[in-house]
Image (cartoon, rainbow, N blue to C red; front, side, top):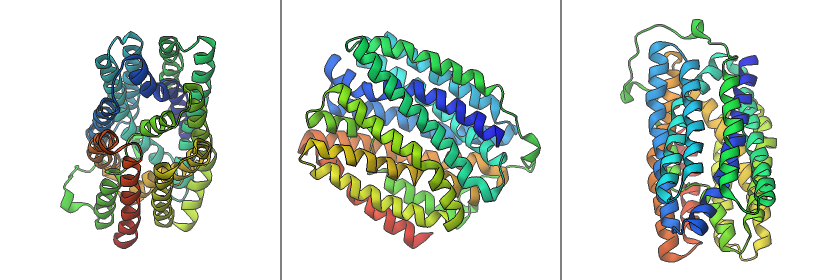
Length: 375
């Protein structure tokens, strides 16, 4: 469990850094750099897709060389560098480059790190291990939002100061990783053979459902733009995002433990259904005050799905391909994420703010049905 805590603390510090800047980016792009929601969708779609596409290759390399820790460190270093591009930005191209470098780092680190968590814990405690990691990760996100709010107030809306100071926790997150212990003896040394047809049928079905769901699950930045659309000031939008992260952090560990007891499928089906209802709320909301419970409800959805999805993949995947298939899961998410964010931006421009959320509602409900039928 010590490795899980160390990796959780690294994620905690890195998410402090990331969430100091992430909720500010759509506001910075639209109000300071003058771009449209479609450009926001383009930047996020490309950046997040890059992260997810890299994950399968990083996972395969990790399985191939039987090492997790060096790739994790490399990925966290790259994410730190990406924050520097944001500080230097004078146009949306710099932001695009910064997000790409940051998300490339996320792609490099995620599969090896998540495989190291699975290597470090017994199978019957895997849900709570991923839940604890998600809780620490999201607690860092909540602290990052608080720091962004304090700094934006203290420096009177100076985005560049926040971008610069975000480098400090990012560097600390890299440093703490050196205390993690490689679990090389637990990785089988058999020859790696990775073919889609050879994967377990349950895993094939789950990956297809995840891909379809992701088509309606656009970047969270559209939630922040929705709040701006309903008249919230940047500081209040940060508080909304803080509400989401606090709920997410509080319920991630209990959700992981619950999945160890009742199974992963029930929680995931319920989570996808709940996502559809929450997105319907974002589509039809008329009173700005109702965004507070909606952001809290979205935190519940995240808590009951993200860590549980990773635990399900780790349960099903052959041990010698664990990092590869954890990365493949993220890659399927990434394949759908670029069109999801681009479609969301286009729907917003063409039909108005509620349109992408209606689309997400339909995809969430279809994913819940698909998961129930095929797993």
